[in-house]
Image (cartoon, rainbow, N blue to C red; front, side, top):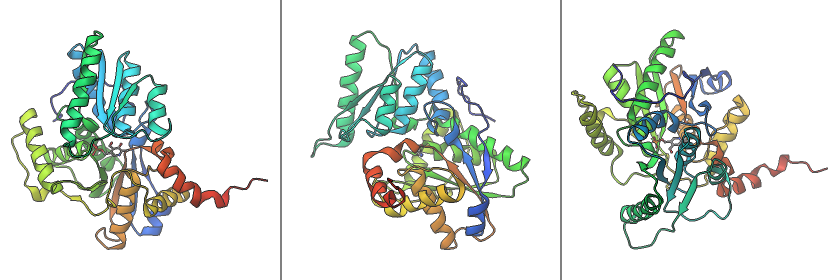
Amino acid sequence: MALNQGKISFLELPTPLQFLPSISKDLGIQLYIKRDDLTSYGMGGNKLRKLEYYLHDAKAKGATLLMTVGGAQTNHGRLTASVAAKYGMKCAILALDDYPGELSSNLLLDRIMGAEVFLKKQEKGCPYEAQLQNLIDQVRRRYEAAGEKVYFIPMGGSGEVGVPGYYDCAVELAQQQSAMGLPACKLLVAVGSMGTYMGLFTGIFNEKLNLDLQGIAIAPFYKDPADHALEYYKNVAAYYGLSELPTRQDFAIRNDYTFGGYNNAVKEVREAIYYLARREGILLDPCYTGKAFYGLMDLVEKGSIAQGETVIFLHTGGQPGLNGPNHRLAMETELMDGIHVM
Ligand SMILES: Cc1ncc(COP(=O)(O)O)c(C=O)c1O
């Protein structure tokens, strides 16, 4: 049963599910990677599956402009820009954030694809949500005055409309699992605004799939992630008319691999990135997948993932973040030893 929501299909699916032989041997598990970083627009990533649904809704409502919010280096913003470009729409990306000091990484890609980016420094002493709403209202008025019909996509594409994107992905994974003869698998995913996790969870829960979902939060949650997830699920269930409700114990989201912040430069995370890159030739990103992959390795070391277990790591993309100034400068000092200027 797919969730009842129209979509405009632009992805070439399924994305590959690849075995990682070297790291499987190193860690003593059977490790697979689901390559959602290889989705085909704007350098790829998880948000495109959600955007197939948002785009349909936006077009049905006659929108001419996609507007969304995030951090200055939002991957979701970049992918929204790519979809807007492909479908002849305008795009505005809003961030309550500082200008990172250079036009690099996702900001550069946003502009290459024609999106406009609005950055506003966060003021101290005024709640984040209120400031963000002011910014949204201000920019919306500006475009509406110019005759645009604005369609707003919530942060990370994590409302109800995008949830079927990762519901479908869970079903797609279960089909690959069965075609490849894999046993029950643990499925690890980075959790930011939670839409990806929620889509997977909703698919696994309602379709009774043989996947044991483990989320890894990449930034601290203000409340217990399981409480947040249950509230989110209730909204999703009401929107799609799902009758069976989980309990908070059904959600598994670890909050202990955040390293205390969002998109912060962390040595252990960079080392996890170098490790996967050097053993398997696959690049992670420093904000999301690097933290989640570090979490995976630590869970193996601590025995929470058992020896011999079959594990799928969902690669959600984000690699342009490697060129974000804070990460790039930290990596430069670590990697210069292998640059030989002769
Ligand atoms: C590369 C990458 N991975 C994972 C996530 C987390 O997805 P979600 O926000 O749906 O939890 C994001 C969100 O921006 C992302 O950009």
